[in-house]
Structure formats: C-alpha cells, structure tokens
Image (cartoon, each protein chain N blue to C red):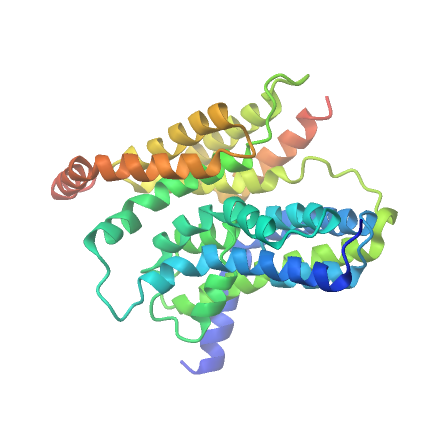
Length: 108
Length: 242
C-alpha cells in the first residue's frame, strides 16, 4: 500500500534527522568552549587518513569481481589515477584522465 | 580588505576546486532526479529532498523507503547506518570548523563526503579567508546537487544520454585526495589501516553492511596502537622532513 503524503513527509523528516545526527553529533559532544579530551584530539589527527581510505573503498564497494569484467575497469582506472597523480601532481589531469579511461574501459 | 573583497576572493579560490564535484553531481543528481521521476515523485519532491537531505547515497535509499511500508523507526536506523561515516568526518573537522561563526552550522549540515574531503585536504591559499572558502565549497556542492537533481526530476525519462561511468569522477577525486594526503604524511599507518580494514570489512560483510563493522575495527586499531603511533609521529617530527 502506498504511504499517505503526511507519512511520506514524516519519513523524509526522519531521514533528514538521522543524517544531521551523524553530522552534528561530534560537534555537540565536543563544543569549542570546553577542552577536548586528549584521546579525541588524537583521533582528530589520525582519523582523517583512515576515513579517506574508507571513503575510497566505499566509492568502490559495488565492484563485482565475479562479473564479466571482474572489476578490472575500476582497478585499472584507480591505478592510473594513483600513478598519474604521483607523477604529475595535477588534480584535474588525474581525475579527468582516470574518469575518461574508465568510461572507455566499461564500453569495450 | 573590505568584506566584499574577502568574500569574492574566497569564492574565486573555492570554485576551481569544486569543478570535479560539478561534473560528478550533475551526473549523479540528474540520475537521482530521473530515478525519483520514474518512481512516481514530482520534481518538487526531488528539489526538497536534495535540498534538505544532501547526502547522495542516502537519497537513493530514501526513494526505496518512500515506496515501502511506513516505518519511521526502521528509516531512522537505516539512515544512521548508511551515514555513520559522517561521525568520523565530524571528529576530523572539530578543529578546522572552529571559529567559523554563523557559517559553522551550515558547514556541518553540508558535510557530505565531497565537502568533507575537499575542506579537509584543500591547500587554502595565503590571504584567503578559511571560513568563507569552506562555506563556498559546501554551498557550491550543495547547489550542484540540487540543480542536477531538479533538472533530472523535471526531464524525467526524457533524459537520454549515455554518460555511464561518469560517476567514477567521485572515486577518482577520493583517490587523488588519498594520494595527496599520503604524500604529506610522514607516518602512513592510519591510511594503511583505513584501506586494509575497509577492504577486509567489504569482503566479510558485503557492500551493504561493511561500514559500521569497519569503523569499529578502525577505531579499535587506532586506539590499540595509539602509544606506538604517537611515538612514531613524534620521532618523525624530531627527525625533520622525511
């Protein structure tokens, strides 16, 4: 059965609330006025590197190694982005070349 | 420098770094709008949801929620699960978002994957106001997403283009940011922990469930190795640039 409009609005409000909770919580627990615990400061220093690593894997999570391409277009394109970026250090070049390569590879 | 000059300088510094997001969000936003349209929701709904939720993957999930049975508690739990990674972003940005005044609530509201990774890693040029720079990065990303989604919602199934694969622009952006951070770090332990545990989590729990177990394992690993990591960091800093 289809939801009523008010039920849909409640559902959207809940999704907004849940999303905002995950974004605001750390800032509410550790407000700037009070000293932040040393452990949390330590996490603030080391966590970003791990979080960006997690984000890379998250953006690749739907790779299917058992599919027809075995995830090769993704893996090859990521490798090219890393190599190009270590070599030329040009953000636009690395992103554009990697994306165009990927779009070609999935059409082969 | 007067207020107007400060603002326009920050905008001119922020706009170029958001260009990859412009490409990615136009594509993903339109795809989302079309998806909403074919799921029976008008462009008004798409506009509101993209404006208020501003969390790409969650908005695709939300369409499924809207088409299912009414279950607010289930929707809340699912949202917390899908978006739990934002907790890590918040802890990482506690210092950077400090002192940004009235812009701070908006910076936190708009802290999607892309705003976080750019605001965390961007080398803000000398003389550019940090608060305004991060504000414009967030605002532009938000505008791209809402514009893309609304266009997709209006055009609906009339959209007929073959840009399959353009979404890889996001992966490429995150990989570039990872490499940039890697080159800056003297100690790579945390980056390696992040990648290794996430891959392991993905293999063990699958694409829909791996985020929370991976986050817990990352936290545990960083906590257990804290002493060693802090010592290594201190030594690397004493030893000068590596």
